[in-house]
Length: 192
Image (tube, rainbow, N blue to C red; front, side):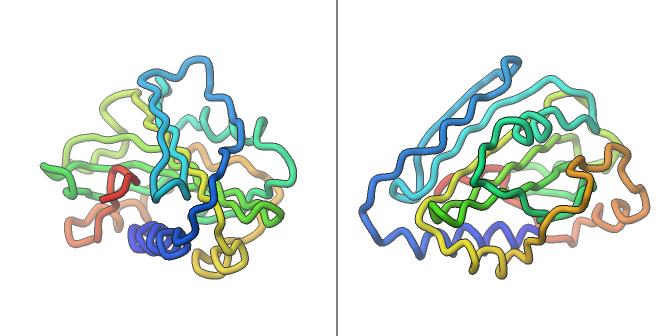
């Protein structure tokens, strides 16, 4: 999965040669959001909103919030599946366990994509649940992208009948992801 995000960011970076100015889609954050930060990156071809919610794992309040407020003509696509993923990450310091879900919306009319990443972090012990209730939320809107190419590159599909992610993680596949040899995912999607 980490290579998918890196590949997507690289794809968007290649498309950022134009100097067109973009206005992000107005999306409210939940009232309970703390530590809110918003900024442009990729030379104005992306806009990131990040914040923290207090929510016990495996709750999905951010996903449910965006399901309610992302307007048409945005279309939600399945990307990484409905389950929480768990893996080690050491890209920004000591190794830690990451619990994450990834979700994607596309807007063909505007040549935009919207990525939602929700995550928790714990020590490197690969516990079945995080040690705290700090759900980190990152929402990135990419502008001027080839939506069909993104759908193909990330293998996005139309969602199943139930748009809600599974709330109870599947333990066996997650054990396989808790392997220090697994590639890790950057904890920030900011420009290097």
